[in-house]
Length: 300
Image: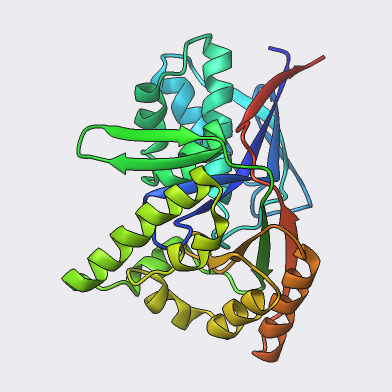
Protein backbone atom coordinates (compact mmCIF):
# COMPACT_ATOMS: atom_id res chain seq x y z
CA UNK A 1 0.00 0.00 0.00
CA UNK A 2 1.29 3.46 -0.85
CA UNK A 3 1.34 6.10 1.83
CA UNK A 4 -2.06 7.72 2.27
CA UNK A 5 -2.62 11.18 3.69
CA UNK A 6 -5.98 12.38 4.96
CA UNK A 7 -6.64 15.97 6.02
CA UNK A 8 -9.75 16.46 8.18
CA UNK A 9 -11.23 19.79 9.29
CA UNK A 10 -12.19 20.87 12.77
CA UNK A 11 -15.86 21.49 13.41
CA UNK A 12 -17.98 23.82 15.46
CA UNK A 13 -21.30 22.33 16.54
CA UNK A 14 -24.56 23.71 17.95
CA UNK A 15 -23.86 27.35 16.96
CA UNK A 16 -26.15 28.45 19.74
CA UNK A 17 -29.70 27.23 19.34
CA UNK A 18 -28.99 24.21 17.12
CA UNK A 19 -28.12 21.88 20.00
CA UNK A 20 -27.09 18.39 18.81
CA UNK A 21 -28.25 19.42 15.32
CA UNK A 22 -26.07 22.08 13.65
CA UNK A 23 -22.44 21.67 12.71
CA UNK A 24 -19.99 23.35 10.36
CA UNK A 25 -16.42 22.65 9.27
CA UNK A 26 -13.58 25.12 9.86
CA UNK A 27 -10.22 25.71 8.16
CA UNK A 28 -8.20 24.10 10.95
CA UNK A 29 -7.00 20.59 10.23
CA UNK A 30 -5.64 17.39 11.69
CA UNK A 31 -3.55 15.40 9.22
CA UNK A 32 -2.94 11.65 9.30
CA UNK A 33 -0.33 9.91 7.11
CA UNK A 34 -0.61 6.13 6.99
CA UNK A 35 1.53 3.31 5.61
CA UNK A 36 0.96 -0.43 5.82
CA UNK A 37 3.30 -1.93 8.40
CA UNK A 38 3.78 -5.06 10.49
CA UNK A 39 2.97 -3.81 13.96
CA UNK A 40 1.97 -0.33 15.04
CA UNK A 41 4.22 2.71 14.97
CA UNK A 42 2.75 6.12 15.81
CA UNK A 43 4.54 9.44 15.46
CA UNK A 44 2.86 12.65 16.55
CA UNK A 45 3.51 16.31 15.80
CA UNK A 46 3.70 18.00 18.18
CA UNK A 47 5.22 15.20 20.25
CA UNK A 48 2.60 13.48 22.41
CA UNK A 49 3.68 10.31 24.20
CA UNK A 50 0.08 9.59 25.26
CA UNK A 51 -1.17 9.43 21.66
CA UNK A 52 1.85 7.40 20.57
CA UNK A 53 0.45 4.42 22.47
CA UNK A 54 -1.87 2.38 20.24
CA UNK A 55 -4.42 1.82 23.01
CA UNK A 56 -4.81 5.60 23.42
CA UNK A 57 -4.80 6.58 19.76
CA UNK A 58 -8.35 6.93 18.45
CA UNK A 59 -7.28 6.98 14.79
CA UNK A 60 -5.59 3.57 15.14
CA UNK A 61 -8.51 2.12 17.09
CA UNK A 62 -11.00 3.19 14.42
CA UNK A 63 -8.72 2.06 11.57
CA UNK A 64 -8.41 -1.41 13.10
CA UNK A 65 -12.16 -1.70 13.72
CA UNK A 66 -13.06 -0.38 10.25
CA UNK A 67 -10.68 -2.74 8.45
CA UNK A 68 -11.86 -5.78 10.37
CA UNK A 69 -15.49 -4.75 9.83
CA UNK A 70 -14.81 -5.07 6.09
CA UNK A 71 -13.20 -8.48 6.50
CA UNK A 72 -9.61 -7.25 6.12
CA UNK A 73 -7.14 -8.49 8.72
CA UNK A 74 -5.41 -5.59 10.45
CA UNK A 75 -1.71 -6.37 10.80
CA UNK A 76 -0.66 -2.88 11.80
CA UNK A 77 0.19 0.53 10.41
CA UNK A 78 2.75 3.27 10.54
CA UNK A 79 0.90 6.48 11.37
CA UNK A 80 2.09 10.07 11.48
CA UNK A 81 -0.45 12.30 13.19
CA UNK A 82 -0.11 16.08 12.79
CA UNK A 83 -2.41 17.63 15.37
CA UNK A 84 -3.64 21.20 14.99
CA UNK A 85 -7.12 20.79 16.49
CA UNK A 86 -6.95 21.05 20.29
CA UNK A 87 -8.41 18.21 22.36
CA UNK A 88 -11.46 18.62 24.62
CA UNK A 89 -12.14 22.18 23.45
CA UNK A 90 -15.37 21.70 21.47
CA UNK A 91 -13.74 21.69 18.04
CA UNK A 92 -14.34 18.08 17.00
CA UNK A 93 -10.85 16.66 17.51
CA UNK A 94 -12.19 13.13 17.99
CA UNK A 95 -14.30 13.45 14.83
CA UNK A 96 -11.16 14.20 12.80
CA UNK A 97 -9.60 10.91 13.90
CA UNK A 98 -12.78 8.90 13.30
CA UNK A 99 -13.46 10.37 9.87
CA UNK A 100 -9.82 10.11 8.80
CA UNK A 101 -9.54 6.46 9.78
CA UNK A 102 -12.81 5.52 8.07
CA UNK A 103 -11.69 7.18 4.82
CA UNK A 104 -8.34 5.38 4.92
CA UNK A 105 -9.96 2.02 5.63
CA UNK A 106 -12.37 2.53 2.75
CA UNK A 107 -9.51 3.35 0.37
CA UNK A 108 -7.49 0.34 1.50
CA UNK A 109 -10.41 -2.06 1.12
CA UNK A 110 -11.46 -0.38 -2.16
CA UNK A 111 -15.10 -0.17 -1.10
CA UNK A 112 -17.53 2.69 -1.61
CA UNK A 113 -18.11 4.69 1.53
CA UNK A 114 -21.88 4.98 1.81
CA UNK A 115 -23.66 6.84 4.57
CA UNK A 116 -24.78 3.54 6.05
CA UNK A 117 -21.24 2.17 6.22
CA UNK A 118 -19.90 5.44 7.58
CA UNK A 119 -22.38 5.64 10.45
CA UNK A 120 -22.09 1.92 11.21
CA UNK A 121 -18.42 2.48 12.05
CA UNK A 122 -18.44 6.08 13.31
CA UNK A 123 -21.23 5.58 15.83
CA UNK A 124 -19.23 2.80 17.45
CA UNK A 125 -16.91 5.57 18.69
CA UNK A 126 -18.97 8.77 18.75
CA UNK A 127 -22.74 9.26 18.37
CA UNK A 128 -22.64 12.89 17.26
CA UNK A 129 -23.41 13.47 13.55
CA UNK A 130 -23.26 17.25 14.08
CA UNK A 131 -19.48 16.82 14.43
CA UNK A 132 -18.88 13.76 12.26
CA UNK A 133 -20.71 14.92 9.13
CA UNK A 134 -19.11 18.35 8.67
CA UNK A 135 -15.69 16.81 9.33
CA UNK A 136 -16.41 14.34 6.51
CA UNK A 137 -18.36 16.45 4.03
CA UNK A 138 -17.57 20.06 4.97
CA UNK A 139 -20.06 22.91 4.83
CA UNK A 140 -23.02 23.35 7.15
CA UNK A 141 -24.91 20.28 8.35
CA UNK A 142 -28.31 19.88 9.95
CA UNK A 143 -28.50 16.32 11.26
CA UNK A 144 -31.27 14.21 12.77
CA UNK A 145 -30.15 10.97 14.44
CA UNK A 146 -33.01 8.52 14.78
CA UNK A 147 -33.15 5.05 16.27
CA UNK A 148 -32.04 3.28 13.09
CA UNK A 149 -31.13 6.00 10.64
CA UNK A 150 -29.54 9.42 10.33
CA UNK A 151 -31.11 12.05 8.09
CA UNK A 152 -29.24 15.22 7.24
CA UNK A 153 -28.98 18.15 4.87
CA UNK A 154 -25.88 20.02 3.80
CA UNK A 155 -25.20 23.35 2.18
CA UNK A 156 -22.06 25.41 1.69
CA UNK A 157 -21.28 28.15 4.14
CA UNK A 158 -20.80 31.66 2.74
CA UNK A 159 -17.23 32.91 2.50
CA UNK A 160 -17.96 36.56 3.36
CA UNK A 161 -18.10 35.65 7.05
CA UNK A 162 -15.45 34.06 9.25
CA UNK A 163 -15.29 32.35 12.61
CA UNK A 164 -13.18 33.94 15.32
CA UNK A 165 -12.49 30.98 17.57
CA UNK A 166 -11.16 31.63 21.06
CA UNK A 167 -9.54 28.59 22.66
CA UNK A 168 -9.09 28.79 26.44
CA UNK A 169 -6.67 26.65 28.42
CA UNK A 170 -9.60 24.89 30.10
CA UNK A 171 -10.36 21.38 28.84
CA UNK A 172 -13.97 20.17 29.04
CA UNK A 173 -14.53 16.53 28.05
CA UNK A 174 -17.87 16.03 26.31
CA UNK A 175 -19.00 13.63 29.06
CA UNK A 176 -18.47 16.31 31.69
CA UNK A 177 -20.34 18.89 29.62
CA UNK A 178 -23.26 16.46 29.26
CA UNK A 179 -23.51 15.88 32.99
CA UNK A 180 -24.45 19.49 33.73
CA UNK A 181 -27.46 19.42 31.40
CA UNK A 182 -30.96 19.02 32.88
CA UNK A 183 -33.10 15.96 32.25
CA UNK A 184 -36.09 18.16 31.33
CA UNK A 185 -36.56 21.65 29.91
CA UNK A 186 -39.64 23.87 29.87
CA UNK A 187 -41.99 24.11 26.92
CA UNK A 188 -41.15 27.82 26.76
CA UNK A 189 -37.42 27.13 26.43
CA UNK A 190 -38.02 24.48 23.76
CA UNK A 191 -40.02 26.97 21.67
CA UNK A 192 -37.33 29.62 22.27
CA UNK A 193 -34.71 27.37 20.67
CA UNK A 194 -36.87 26.13 17.80
CA UNK A 195 -37.55 29.73 16.79
CA UNK A 196 -33.89 30.71 16.88
CA UNK A 197 -32.56 27.59 15.19
CA UNK A 198 -34.96 28.18 12.32
CA UNK A 199 -33.93 31.82 12.17
CA UNK A 200 -30.23 30.86 12.01
CA UNK A 201 -30.67 28.76 8.88
CA UNK A 202 -32.70 31.51 7.21
CA UNK A 203 -30.11 34.14 8.16
CA UNK A 204 -27.23 32.14 6.65
CA UNK A 205 -29.09 31.14 3.48
CA UNK A 206 -30.38 34.66 2.82
CA UNK A 207 -27.18 36.37 3.94
CA UNK A 208 -29.05 38.49 6.48
CA UNK A 209 -26.39 38.37 9.17
CA UNK A 210 -28.08 41.04 11.27
CA UNK A 211 -30.31 38.21 12.53
CA UNK A 212 -27.46 36.12 13.94
CA UNK A 213 -27.28 37.78 17.36
CA UNK A 214 -30.85 36.69 18.05
CA UNK A 215 -30.53 33.41 16.15
CA UNK A 216 -27.55 32.24 18.22
CA UNK A 217 -29.27 32.69 21.59
CA UNK A 218 -29.88 29.46 23.47
CA UNK A 219 -31.65 28.12 26.53
CA UNK A 220 -31.04 24.37 26.22
CA UNK A 221 -27.32 23.99 26.95
CA UNK A 222 -25.32 27.21 27.25
CA UNK A 223 -26.97 28.47 30.48
CA UNK A 224 -25.80 25.25 32.15
CA UNK A 225 -22.43 24.77 30.48
CA UNK A 226 -21.28 28.35 30.95
CA UNK A 227 -20.84 27.56 34.65
CA UNK A 228 -17.82 25.46 33.60
CA UNK A 229 -16.24 28.44 31.82
CA UNK A 230 -15.09 31.42 33.94
CA UNK A 231 -16.03 34.71 32.32
CA UNK A 232 -18.39 33.25 29.72
CA UNK A 233 -20.77 36.23 29.74
CA UNK A 234 -17.90 38.71 29.70
CA UNK A 235 -16.37 36.99 26.67
CA UNK A 236 -19.68 37.10 24.81
CA UNK A 237 -20.18 40.79 25.63
CA UNK A 238 -16.62 41.66 24.59
CA UNK A 239 -17.13 40.04 21.18
CA UNK A 240 -20.35 41.95 20.53
CA UNK A 241 -18.70 45.21 21.64
CA UNK A 242 -16.18 44.79 18.81
CA UNK A 243 -18.74 44.03 16.10
CA UNK A 244 -19.34 40.28 16.23
CA UNK A 245 -22.53 39.20 14.44
CA UNK A 246 -23.24 36.19 16.64
CA UNK A 247 -21.43 34.43 19.51
CA UNK A 248 -21.81 30.94 20.96
CA UNK A 249 -20.09 28.11 22.71
CA UNK A 250 -18.35 25.84 20.21
CA UNK A 251 -19.71 22.34 20.66
CA UNK A 252 -19.56 21.37 24.31
CA UNK A 253 -16.81 23.95 24.94
CA UNK A 254 -14.57 25.28 26.19
CA UNK A 255 -13.86 27.14 22.94
CA UNK A 256 -16.14 29.97 21.90
CA UNK A 257 -16.91 31.08 18.37
CA UNK A 258 -17.84 34.53 17.11
CA UNK A 259 -19.14 34.91 13.56
CA UNK A 260 -18.03 38.18 11.96
CA UNK A 261 -17.60 40.02 8.66
CA UNK A 262 -14.73 42.28 9.76
CA UNK A 263 -12.56 43.39 12.70
CA UNK A 264 -11.62 39.75 13.26
CA UNK A 265 -8.44 40.49 15.22
CA UNK A 266 -10.19 43.14 17.29
CA UNK A 267 -12.88 40.64 18.26
CA UNK A 268 -10.35 37.91 19.02
CA UNK A 269 -8.17 40.16 21.18
CA UNK A 270 -11.17 41.44 23.12
CA UNK A 271 -12.35 37.89 23.86
CA UNK A 272 -8.85 36.83 24.95
CA UNK A 273 -8.66 39.88 27.23
CA UNK A 274 -12.07 39.06 28.75
CA UNK A 275 -10.85 35.56 29.55
CA UNK A 276 -7.63 36.99 31.02
CA UNK A 277 -9.59 39.23 33.38
CA UNK A 278 -11.35 36.09 34.62
CA UNK A 279 -8.09 34.26 35.24
CA UNK A 280 -8.08 32.12 32.09
CA UNK A 281 -5.34 32.01 29.45
CA UNK A 282 -6.55 31.68 25.86
CA UNK A 283 -5.64 32.23 22.23
CA UNK A 284 -7.70 33.06 19.18
CA UNK A 285 -7.73 31.93 15.56
CA UNK A 286 -9.47 33.57 12.62
CA UNK A 287 -10.86 30.75 10.49
CA UNK A 288 -12.97 30.49 7.36
CA UNK A 289 -15.72 27.93 7.01
CA UNK A 290 -14.50 24.83 5.15
CA UNK A 291 -16.83 23.64 2.39
CA UNK A 292 -14.65 20.79 1.14
CA UNK A 293 -14.48 18.44 4.09
CA UNK A 294 -11.97 15.64 4.52
CA UNK A 295 -9.49 15.10 1.69
CA UNK A 296 -7.70 11.80 1.06
CA UNK A 297 -4.69 11.58 -1.24
CA UNK A 298 -1.93 9.17 -2.18
CA UNK A 299 1.56 10.34 -1.26
CA UNK A 300 4.08 9.23 -3.88
